Figure 1 (spheres, helix red, strand yellow):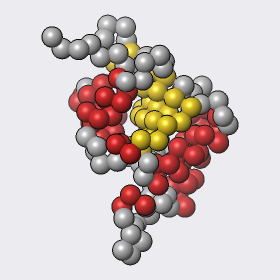
Figure 2 (cartoon, one colour; figure 1 turned 120 degrees about the horizontal axis):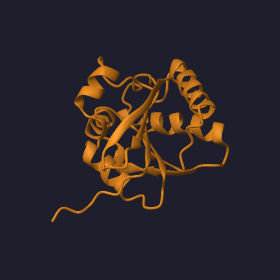
Figure 3 (cartoon, one colour; figure 1 turned 180 degrees about the vertical axis):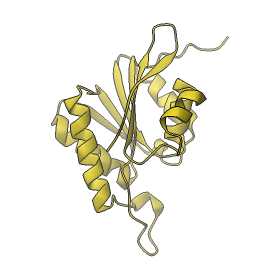
Figure 4 (tube, one colour; figure 1 turned 30 degrees about the vertical axis):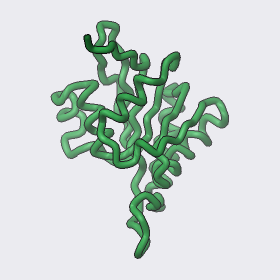
Amino acid sequence: MTPSIQLPKRIYLLRHAKSGWAEPGGRDFDRSLSDAGFAEAELLAETAADKGYRPDLVVCSTAKRCRQTADAVNRVFSGLVEFRYVDALYNAPAEVYLEIANSTRGVDALMLVGHNPAIEEVFASLCGNEVMARTVPQGYPTSGFAVIDATGDGTFALHDFLVG
């Protein structure tokens, strides 16, 4: 018997904003957002808030560029949203993102802040390859923000897609 999946009613998928290159001898994990990335993250967070897209919980990779992207969301919602930082999202396959989403019982609106290719694969898993190909034909962009809703019949549908 396959266990039932109890994903939130709304899932926001946010790929970190544009990052700079690793410092010489530095780790990929420690890459910071570029100046353009900081601006993208701020614009995206403000646009999402203006559209009423507020998560109950943000689960974010602990990589520096993801934390900096989530900081923009935190500033816009100033204490109204719970944040959790999870090491397991860094370099994780889509299945880990979906397991984390499934473990958030009682959360109606969840935001996952992470990396490609996992974010793109979660998007395809929830909305289908056709929707993904139409929405992000060049691949899931940095500061790409998908708003995905449960349809009530156990499937999910894309509600909106923003780019910072």
